[in-house]
Length: 175
Image 1 (cartoon, rainbow, N blue to C red):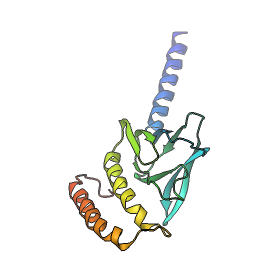
Image 2 (cartoon, one colour; image 1 turned 180 degrees about the horizontal axis):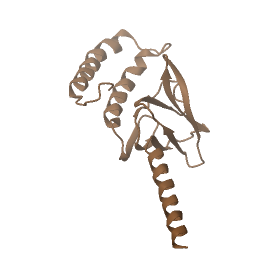
Image 3 (cartoon, helix red, strand yellow; image 1 turned 90 degrees about the horizontal axis):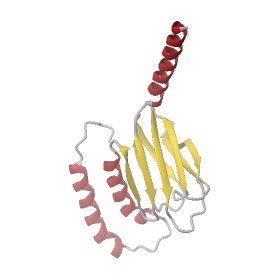
Image 4 (cartoon, rainbow, N blue to C red; image 1 turned 180 degrees about the vertical axis):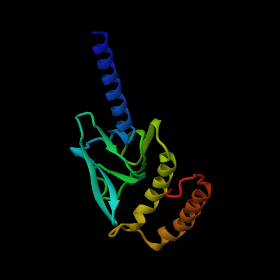
């Protein structure tokens, strides 16, 4: 009887270790969309394959605006969160996913707040996204931005991007 209990405990322990190993290859993203009158029913996680967005996962948004992903990440890289803002190009939410990340997002109309137990390089990526979001209005067709608006801003924008570029200190060459 003791032998059977030992084997049972050993089997359960082995199964838990196997599950723990497999879960370590995943990235977890939990979020809440805090935008008044938000109506989208799902959030999509994309990566880029051969220059085109490819759907990795889709999550339903509950009545409180909450969503979540637990996605396998075999190779670290950039992923994009879309809750419907891609068409209007209002906000870029790009994340650098790698195994074992645990990211929390609070998405507002103008920006997002990043937190979590292990966010990896995403604080740095968030700063890059903020700079992109400042440039985005100038890349939209059909906007009423004139050269009088654009040229004074571009000098400041380029200086800000260069300053940010110089501040990057990471061992990961992909960032």
